[in-house]
Amino acid sequence: MQTKTVLGEKLRESVASVVPIALIVALLCLFFVPISTDLMLAFVIAVLFLIVGMGLFTLGTEASMTPIGNYLGSRMTKTRNLALIIILSFVLGVAITIAEPDLQVLAINVPHINTYVLMLTVSVGVGFFLVVSMIRILLGVDLKWLLIVFYAIVFAVAAFSDRDFLSVAFDSGGVTTGPMTVPFIMALGVGVASIRSDKNAESDSFGLVGLCSIGPIIAVLILGFVYESDSSDISAQAVTSWANTVELGVSYLEAIPEYMLEVAMALSPIVVIFLIFQVVSLKLRRIPFLKIVIGILYTYVGLVLFLTGVNVGFSSLGTLLGQEIASSEYKWLLVPVAMLMGWFIIRAEPAVHVLNRQVEEMSAGAVSEKAMGISLSAAIAVANGLALVRVLTGINILWFLVPGYVLALALSFFVPKMFTAIAFDSGGVASGPMTATFMLPLAMGAAEAVGGNVMTDAFGLVAMVAMTPLITVQIMGAIYKAKSHRENLAREAVAEAVEAAGNDVIELWG
Image 1 (cartoon, helix red, strand yellow):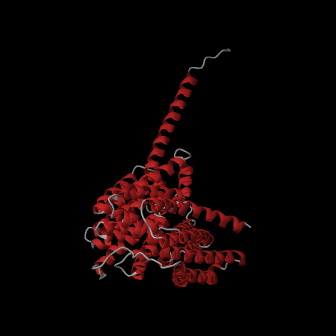
Image 2 (tube, one colour):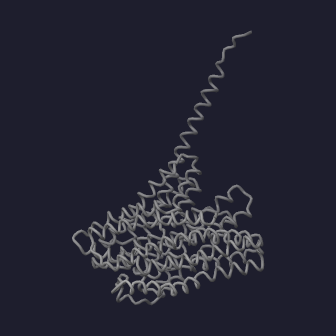
Image 3 (tube, helix red, strand yellow):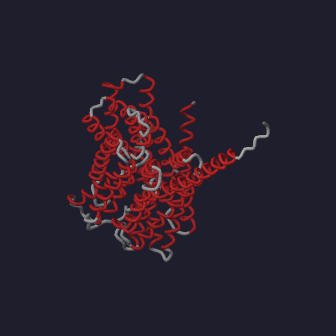
């Protein structure tokens, strides 16, 4: 009964995440952009696949990846063996990232890099920086100095990188902090931090996701120096069409076994690692072990349905919409449409509500959940709008990312440490599944239609979306700090007034 209740809740969250985008798309297709009936039907079927797939997937990751991360993190750190911690952190980082659905969607959309080469490169980047994160927790190093050093390295390498790899690199950092990696990495951090007894141990467990998102950026930029790609015919994803309903149904049925195999291969490393730990070290009792196994099965089925829906019917319509609107006289309509989608995408993400509540609790109500929600929605809407402005004008992404990250890093000196850690963790919250599955194909289709460079102009949208929470959450932290300062001054003034009044008390009895 409890499982049914939780599954129902996850399905409702999926509906809230997918349906707003589907309704906006439906209105565009019915009144502004003519779309063939077969593609629209494929889109409707894909929406159902995404709703069920995302619901099962999020239920499964909460039941499996979060406890696995906690168990492995606490177990490996209790050994006090630094070499073992480093090796296992790297292996776990690689294994969990390969299974990230947002990364798989991005890798399929990148036309000039082999899908498996890109996924492995990104996973190695995450693994390396997960090692850095574990060492940081164990040594208690201040997060902001690591962020400053590594982002300085990022932009130094970016200055000399291949332009066709630049935007993809920053997008890779955004998609790796998705629904699979975030709960696992954060749980791993909590497990590692639990062996420390000082007051900063809990706060140091935040910031892992923010650090791990740097690894893929550097890894893909370096890949650009050594990888020989065929850039002669780079275009948006081809739009599929079907002659009849049977042909459409067969395409879905043929895709399912293909993604069953791909997902099995993607999940197998983390499952094998967990089973080895279970036999050698964890030795969980029957009920907790079965719960994790069932959670893995939910994750598997959900991921198969999600990827099938995305690749058969969802992304194609996004690409075609981008092409049709951008090639019309109303091409600038793409900017407000993208902003509207951004507003609803972020408000529908379940993890955003968790982040907003977390900030409200941390600030003791000084920054309300509602205020956080509105500020994040506005920020993501602006990010989406600017990303489409880039698509239509061809402005280099560094003109946006460099000032944005400089501002984000500068704010870290003026806000409480916890807000900085949560801000850099929250990039993955903003760049959720809808951004990679629909907004990116939309941008790719638009870039191709206006004669732009798909690699330099369309890619980078995820990076823009992932960057804005770094600024927004820290601005909320600055507001909290200012309010706290005023309240402290008011309390001090009252205390001084009471003390002064106490000195003037007149004795009425002798």
